Length: 168
Image (cartoon, rainbow, N blue to C red; front, side, top):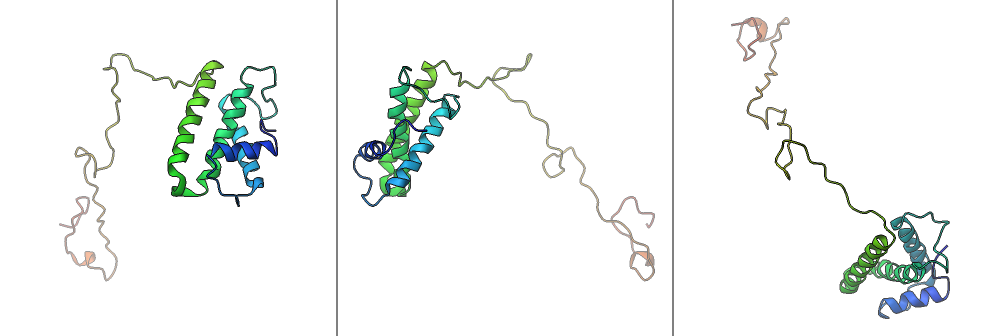
């Protein structure tokens, strides 16, 4: 399902790019980008893919235009830095349109900020690092252990740096 069916959808996307999309860009790829844009719109407004806006919905025509804008941006992204300005223009336009539609439909997009009581507002408390290499209050571990096996240097009485060692 899409808001801009073929072949008119592909022509609208080519026009939305400002006619800078090369002629050799296949219409099948444009159709894929339109489907992807449709999915993005439906996810953005928290609707199932099988539940599009109908002709009776106020938001339908806005969705039609938004789908064209997003699909045009996706098509131009295939060419990288060559069309960077137009991509940024389309990205800004699509973000603003999506935000407008979310607000118009009453979709909450704010992320709540949790603040602790008794603490200064706006600060984030953290736990002190536990590793000796980041926290000066943690002792450096001594990993040098004595080995008192036959024929070893430790067995001959040479002291090591291990404080737990009984060799002195």
